[in-house]
Length: 337
Image (cartoon, rainbow, N blue to C red; front, side, top):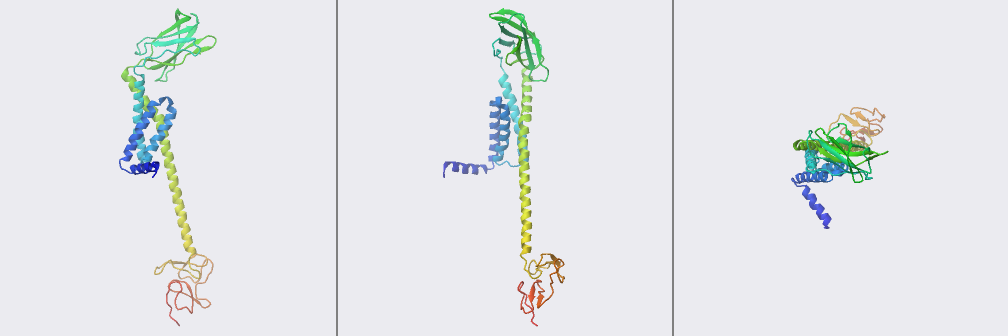
């Protein structure tokens, strides 16, 4: 047997083991955590990939119940949220920021000191304007990454001339939060630096709690919604296929009944089987149900009584000739006259 086929056969046998599903769930958790925490920069793509994997891997390992899949999803996304929040905290813990500059290098060496503090700390934002003067219009824009409060725009004042330009500063306090900032200068047109993170004016424990709650909320709002959408679509498709199969079976059953009626012996009403008593018979001409004591079919008028040298078998109701010694349909022997 070729290696790929042998491997597939072994894996199919493994999936039938009782413990295989637990291995599948653990594998799903590990893969999702690794993808989400290492490729966070591609979060939008990762959200779709993680949602698909969270549904597909357990299903492939045998977890078919939609209820159990939903329960597993809730537990998994809580774990992913904690992992994402913890990973974010470790990424920012100990970070001291970088200097920023504008693309045209008019604004250079922008920074904030100190990088970490409290809401009582005075933070100094500073940037060098290359070729600028003490009358240049320079500002710093500060945004809180953990709230919806409006950003601050502070005018900066020249501090001292430096080689090739002027150094501008702005001193301010900020509320408790985690911020991002950038510098701007109006020199006929606005020139701006890229954003940089800082300052962090929050205690370590509270900072960790904030990142943890943000991670959990982000996972449920971006990944869990996609997962449960896949779950609902899968349930709907399975229910649709089940209804379709049921309708097809019912149609096949009705067709089979019609076929049985069409195969009844022509020449008189026939019972469904020997030795069975029925209240109604079937007309061999039109297939209509008729009472057992009817002389002719109420639907097409086919006579059932003896007519033109013919009579009716008292056992099964089939038409027989008066000269017949026994019924051709049920085998009942007749007394000869």
